[in-house]
Image 1 (cartoon, rainbow, N blue to C red):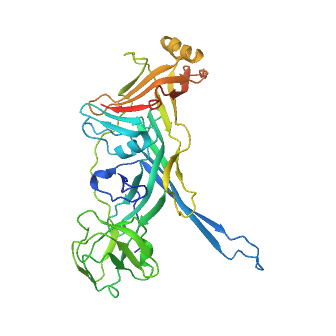
Image 2 (tube, helix red, strand yellow):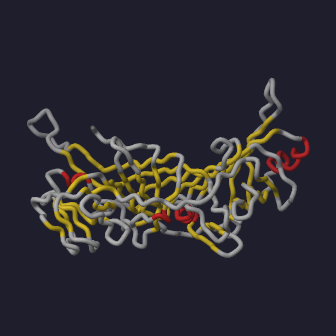
Image 3 (cartoon, rainbow, N blue to C red):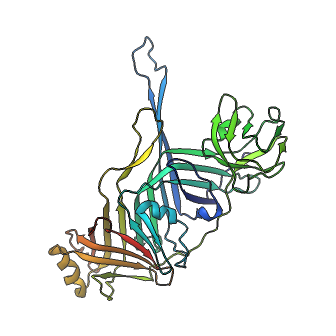
Length: 401
């Protein structure tokens, strides 16, 4: 029976890189839950187009690698101001700076941060017709994050969407090593010889373990592949193994069981306020989009993928707020819009200690928009605008308290 990968049994992991593009191993505390995600690999592959006597192209030229990624998940604060949310590395990669104290967790913008991540997606298979799988991107940066809540969220639950680009994509499949080539694998072997084409199940950055003769996790964190030699059929790594192995052993993805926290935030909890007022401005939901306009340097001679992070322009923070028109808010909202008056917008999502998320836009300017006067409904309006900085790094702040 062929084995399948169940898409409903997926867990993701995000790890900060100490050196750009150096893959990191997943651990249980790196895990977080998602609604959906996509990893899109790419490599320049062009036909050799000089003229020949043939009417066919005869050769392909390969160039640099890259990848794009996107993750959609619920906004899930941990419920404790001393415990960062599961996706804290993604938030820090988006904003640039984390301030972590005893009363609040804050994500603040940074001038020219170069935070990069290794992100892994593990399919945790089970049963006779299911198998494990893992894919990863390394050298990943987050250059766009979008927060939504209320009627713009996921079933009235607050949601966040992260997206960006990466240096390279890879995956971890399933195979066995070749006992005819390696009758014994010592603890310091540093490579495993695969049966013909077995090495094609692994790439640079694969995270795996042995799962038959003796379970082997190299100290409990899995074995990470440094390179794959397609000529010698060898998978090469640097970890010291815990055991000596003999006979064919299954090599499968290492997807550690995640430890995750947090509960969804429903639209029944939260408020919108302007200019420091404690009076809530009633609204239906909204969205904040933060584009950081950073990219990857992937053009230099002698490189086969991106080599570093670079800033390509100024950051951009925009917002939209849906609401029914009410006479008490007309002067505040439409008057401010008409006269191009800056507003200090505060959005609180949630109300419980350790699970309340606040977005602060100190200097928000409104776009010119008109209300929607429907034939058979109450008048509504979607107010949009842009947030500006006051000191260069404060157009948007996110606080958990």
